[in-house]
Structure formats: structure tokens, C-alpha cells
Image (cartoon, rainbow, N blue to C red; front, top):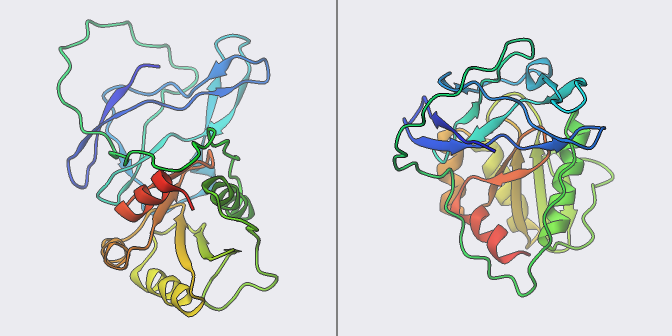
Length: 242
């Protein structure tokens, strides 16, 4: 897959982005065609209708709904990557300019887990219930045991519990605010457990700073159901596992 340059409109950081490919029902790998040169847009509020794009399989010509490509910048901004409309012809190829330095979205820590994990298999998110299920799968993949939902969601917003862990999943359309991060951290302290936060719309600057200060891992999820770490504690968790 060819990457496209993406500049964050918030911090002006440059990234190289490749749209994830998923198998069409015919079996051919299919990815949304990115629109080179179009600026990325910051996602400040989510609407489910805008989170899906129509993609045509080049092998069988089938048209179907696919998750809108998104990228989480290290500054905390969640970016929507423009996609070429399905009926618009592809642009003629041009000579590629000499490649310049492009900063990756994250520089992950070396994996130090005792046993390397297999690749994570995400679950597509279409509802808030799906978001919690995707987070549970991811926590299990990280090595947490007995990941389950509480029978009654607590006032503090705990969505998942596991041995030595409490987790919250924010499936709303707004970035997570400071209060939510502090509540999860306090819940984790009270339960003598670790805390992990998942969000579909990213995190506010104060929430990010507080999470970094207390060592709370933050993840952002796109609609493919694949969580991405957005701070150093989350990078370390992915590297070492539970």
C-alpha cells in the first residue's frame, strides 16, 4: 500500500499514513482510496453516519461500507483522512518527489513481553456496545485474565474489569475530559488495580496531561476496532503486556 503525507492541523506534525486493508466478501484485500493532497480534518464530534465511507472492490466491483480512515496524532488530535469518492476516477500517476523525513505517529517501545503475542484481530465498531466488546478483546490480547463487564455500570463509569484491572470505554462523540480521567484513576486506586482508558474521539489536553502525570494508559479506537496508544504509559503496556 502507498502512504500519503498527512499534516496535523493542530500541531503541524507530519505523518505518513497507509489506509488499512480488509478482505472483501470475494476475498480480495480492499482499502478506502485516499485523496492525496486533501487536508486532514480534526474530529471534534462524532456522528455515526460520517464514520463510514463507500468503497468499491477493484476485484469484483462490489460496493460496501467501510470505516472512515483515521489517525491519532501524538498531540492528542484525532484526524479524519479524506477519501476519494467512489465514482471519482483515480488521478493519473505522477513522478514521486524525493522522500523527505516524516515523523511516525508513534515510536513504540521494543516489545519485552516474555512470549510474543500473535497479531491482534480487531472487531468492527458500529455501536457503543461494540466499542466495549472491542476493548475487552484488546485487553485479553494484552494478557489480562477474566475480562468482563460489571453487571451494573458504576457511577464512576467502569465498563470492564479484569484481574488487577479496571477500564473505561468512552464511545461518545466528544474528546474525553480531565474529570473522566481523574475518576478512572481514583477508581483504580480504590480497587488496588491498574486503570486503562479507551476513547473513540480522543482526549482533551488537560486529560492527556493528567494521564501522563499519573501513568494512566490512554488508547484511541477507530471504527475498525483496533486501539492505538496515545501516551507513553499505553506504549509501555503494549510493549510489555499485562
